[in-house]
Length: 386
Image (cartoon, rainbow, N blue to C red; front, top):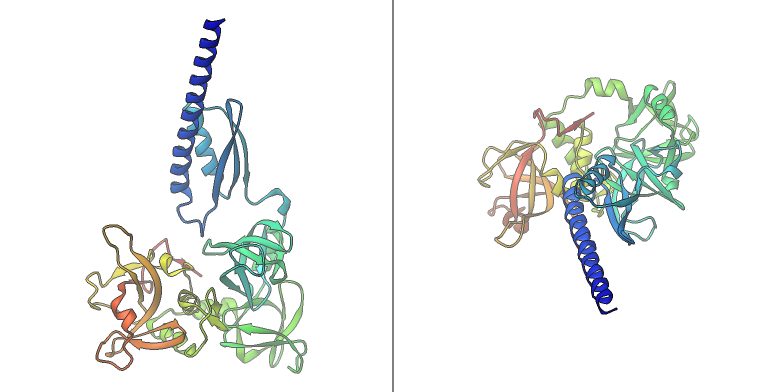
């Protein structure tokens, strides 16, 4: 009996050691897969964990990348670890065939969580295409063209199947080219249907003498003044991104209020301001300043404001130290013009200077400059162009 107890203890001991080894191996592999496929949780989902079931591990959680979970499973199998796969692949099956959506408001609000009290993290303007990942109550988890993932109130979008979306995109569209304005229920422009912002897109139904008769993503019919919009394909054909066009759109927003998470001409944060200006120059930029600094061509490596050209993006924040990485928290657009001026959204869209002798000198920006990037006239697969 004494020997049986001894053997039982040994079996339990080695079983626990084996389980602990499996868990440690899983955690190391899981971290490696996450770092490879989803290093930035703003643009990729990989939330995988485990629970024990006897000698097996039950994998649970969710990801939007099938390759990521397949990579984990292959690695676990190679290590001889048995498991049960219960990980959800997004889009969830509950989404059904409506895996796409279009923004249906002038600016649809996207939040960090699926509730109205959650932080506003970004916006998408009317007609922006979204990928639907899952539905929960009155909110949906969606992904924007620049891959940003957040929750949107279903009242701000219209759901589409892939076929419906293709038909919409094959239709003739109208782009709104005024800073802000309205669409109307009637061709006499007496009754407002909804507000409009720069860059919003709707479907053209009929071209009239003074207006475009249009259809919104949810099927509403309205009228837009002809001198406030253009046919989208023609606009794209004639679009010539340039330093001057960047400056024109940037200055047209002077005085616009600051809004954390804002990306429309109603109100915007610093990177949202850049997104709006560059959208009208034919670019879909990354959402946040810390992402925007990773694209384009590096300029002004020595941080001496040398070689900068109008339209370059200037980044600000906290420089790297021995203990901490560089932290990018702000972005503006260089205008130069002999005054070292730049334009940015800080409290409101405004002009400031990097010249300490100027009355427009911004002390914080002057002391926290991190470098610049160029998007214009740069050939890069990383930059999304309309």
